[in-house]
Length: 142
Image (cartoon, rainbow, N blue to C red; front, top):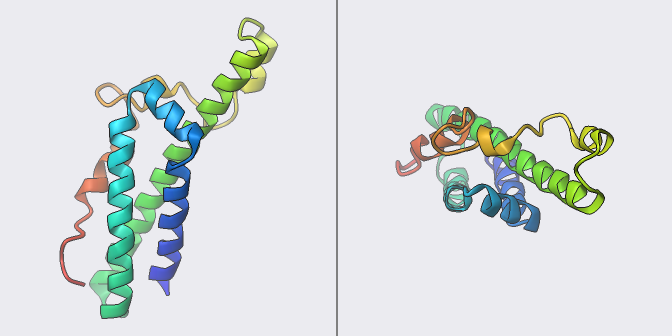
């Protein structure tokens, strides 16, 4: 059952990664390659979840792995939401102008920091939130 729930999270994350806003923001920030890797890893985890549900639904190792995967999906979805938010903010600024303090303030939504610094592959303080995606061991038989 938990596998089915996580499968839904994976589907949701893959849909978000495919949106035009996320694609545009990732290209603008120079992190398109990393988001493509996240998409590939999520698709692979989705396939493993289906396999795990069929093979051994009551394994304690599987349960622990599912907790880690759920946390990883939550972190990844937060990052994708931030990308969408940043893309919308840029659209509003480009449409209505960016010089006025009122416009800038109206665009500052909670959870939308300056993504160019936050998610930069070298100096970004939040890249660790998705860097562990590759560390989730998905190759073992469950």
